[in-house]
Image 1 (cartoon, rainbow, N blue to C red):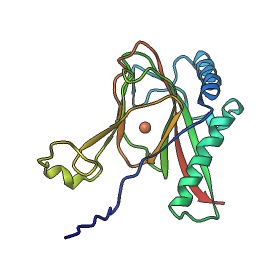
Image 2 (cartoon, rainbow, N blue to C red):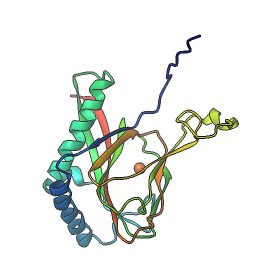
Image 3 (cartoon, protein in one colour):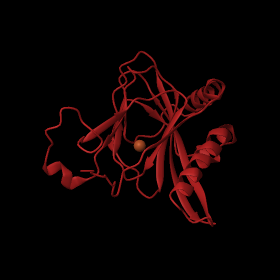
Image 4 (tube, rainbow, N blue to C red):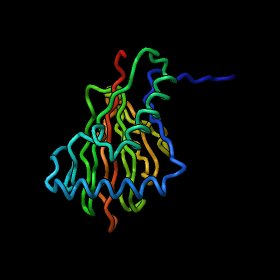
Length: 198
Ligand SMILES: [Fe+2]
């Protein structure tokens, strides 16, 4: 007896590791720190004890390289999802600097097709993982007698950050970041992407 599986309405997370991450991240880290030094207060959002910049990276030439890559990655994902070819991709991006003890509360990103994070600098695994919450609300009515969780039975899935890696996910997929238990700052760029008629 052959049993086949079909994934209906799957929650997808896309990830890519940049080949030139060493040089790319060194430059980005400098830009991130420079931005914080100009605006030490930052903005308050879902970050706990961390510093977050305003959503303005898309307008800053200093961040042109990461802005381009965010759009390139999301365009590729949009193509794989059969998005209309007459659409263009727009984004907003911001810097997060989370010192030891900082975390990011569970949240989602409204009004965008994709959200994501790119990791610039961190000390893994002590810096804490990004975690995603099962968006299938009704599935919380029942737990499964599974020995090991699978993507189907889990109610939360963690992914370990890695400097040079970008994660992209639907804006509606709730996520947060664990407390940074390392002795180094966890530095990342977060973004929202929207595909709009050109
Ligand atoms: Fe987020």
